[in-house]
Length: 319
Image (cartoon, rainbow, N blue to C red; front, side):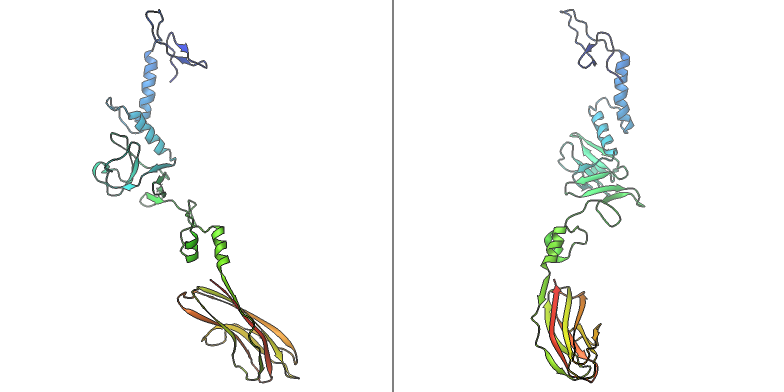
């Protein structure tokens, strides 16, 4: 295919050959149009039409346009569609496209999973190509996945294994913990961290003259509700008031009513010494509908004493 090269062509700008009208009165001869040029034009156009699965039709003045739409779809370039549909829409607009569903009816029969585009006078159908990407009017993206045992349109979304678009969770969704398939922005994560509640109590009254061994003394307790986790920090100071013998002391944190002795911090103050003891425990999987009481515990494990327990302090961080 080339520009016209018959006799009497004219320069239409930039050295491009073009046509000239015949003017008999003025004695101007029109440009000759050789058969070879017309054949080249015909075959170029029909080549595009036929390579995209269409047959020549003297009555169809939209064949080239249809072929170009098929070429655009088969290129795999991103394009848009209205929705999935088994039934042809009643009043489609020219240029609108649907993805034909798995059980089509009417004009869509035999075109499962294909793109159906309305030309204004009829439907043209385009078979999907591998990884063709379609954006629907509901703002979801779909790709034609040929790696499946049965090729299908698959929602294109990011996962741990596949990159893709993501939906951003709202602040309310992040707070409620319902973001399994959505992305949490740093701003929302920061807001949740800032929303964590910290409960710090003034040190409780010291307990003095503890003589009973293996007696768990509740130094301080805090009740919490409406949370799924609690991070607890405890502090006590043990003073050994015995003049000559050291004494083993322990402190730990527990849920009220919890049996046994959870992980603890052990100390052994020398006679007349005072030593600090700190403990920490994380409680998870709590039921927000329930109320939990967190206790700071201290005791001694020997008969010598007395032991004074000073400056007890329990701090909780939770939702």
